[in-house]
Image 1: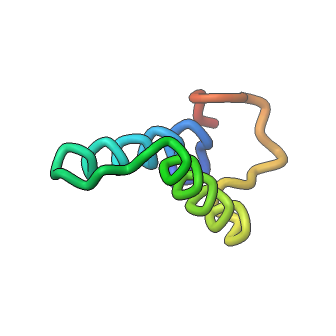
Image 2 (image 1 turned 90 degrees about the horizontal axis):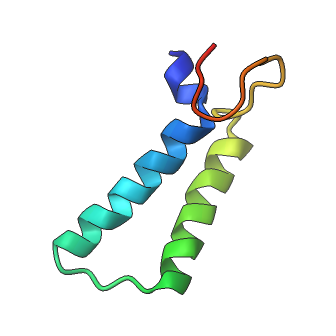
Image 3 (image 1 turned 30 degrees about the horizontal axis):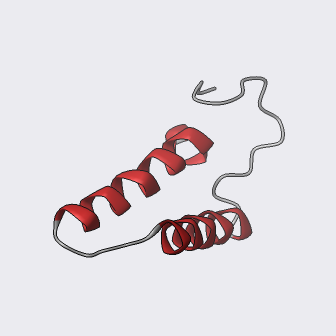
Length: 63
């Protein structure tokens, strides 16, 4: 379950989702891409999914 609280995991997942959409023909420009990623990550932060203030590790390291 700690993987779901990892910032790197969510950034990688968002990047993969956008790459997958482009592969299937949806033309997403940089402005739209940034808007989608910021919206998704903002929602996850708001829900407390990627908030772990007690962690010692930063980035892709899991506790």
